[in-house]
Amino acid sequence: MAVSGWPRFVYSAALYALSPLIAWRIWREQVLTYSRLQRLGMRLGTLPSAPRIWLHCASVGELRAARPLIEGLLDRYPTHSLLLTTMTATGAAQAHTLIGEQSATFQARLAHRFLPLDFPGAAKRFVRTVQPDLAIMFETELWPNLLHACYQQQVPVAVVNGRLSPRAFKRYQTLRPLMASTLANVNWLGAKSLEDAERFNVLGCSAAKTTVVGSLKFEMPSQHKALKEGEHLHLQWGSRPVWVAGSTREGEEALLLNAHRQLLKHYPNALLVLVPRHPQRFDEVAKLCETKDWQFSRRSQQQPVTAQTQVYLGDTLGELGTLYAAGSVAFVGGSLVPLGGHNILEPAALGRPVLSGPYIDNFADVAEPLQSVGALTLVESPEVLAKALAGYLADPALAHQVGEAGREAVDSHKGALARTFVGLGQLLSR
Image 1 (cartoon, helix red, strand yellow):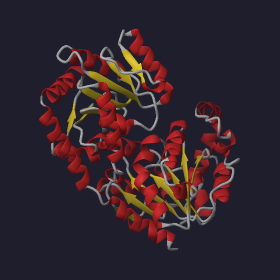
Image 2: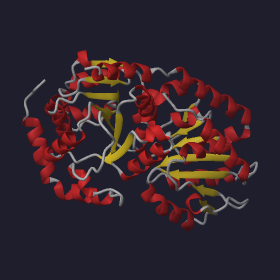
Image 3: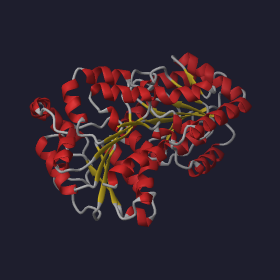
Image 4: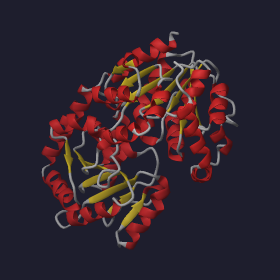
């Protein structure tokens, strides 16, 4: 449905005005094996054969959550290829990891490129070059010019795992004309919850195009490999107690190291596996450990974990599940600082008790099922975190019981993937 274009024109003018800052972002997110011109919809190289489905995920977390969808699309539509796009360099690395883990047949039909910047010309070039049968946007990846280009090229658009946190909803309400014109180009939206669906409807998405399907984040892939590799790692480290802090963000590592120091007073052989969210911060976190006189080892440098090692820095990509599985308790970062949190379901699906800071806006909907069975505990300070860790380490049977309750909660909330494929199938059948 065509709507007034003035909000998009104003938005595009603002993008052009911000071009210098955007150019800096391109430089920072560059990957040497990709042409920077991909950010302008050029130099996409040889794409997998048509017909194509295009799936866009912002970065690492979204790609991980989309994995069952990706594999399901390749399985259900064997005559189609699948193009993945991401915004970030870490997302590109995660995409390559995911592609490398597929069968040879799937790999031949799967490729990754960077998403073009949302300038009108770049968006038009990209959609015209890719010529997808279907464009799928994951969660809140709503780019006005890209979706308008899809409308112009008669490419149906689906939003899957659609979510809008209260904070994001409030922000988007100030841009309601732009959001309404953008959402008018969406043919089907699969919302995570009734609340999310209602927020999208208020912003301008037709209720007739909206279906509540549940969260794809519960559709966790098989954890067998991660559990096996994690068990092998733990055996290498001996019988010492291990806890894992994953997806940590700037400002959190110091707090987590503070909690670990308190824990060491009661469990002097405890090991913290510290996994920063972004690879550009790996060296920074290593420097923090060094300046605070921690005995630490770096996984990327294959440094051994000895009896003296207090902190193991998980400075690699694609191994978070294995590292979570190597510990008996997991803390999920981005939550002790006000950043909205990260995927609390990943360690829960591995049967690990989950601890998190109080800032979990991005995962509030999936937190409730874990909290209801006691598998997720929110901690607001290093002191409270250390106390919670000590409680689990003192009672391994309790840790196991709580972890299993969390795993069962994840399993019981599956089903969103099947409902999502119903919506996507209706668009592809056109």
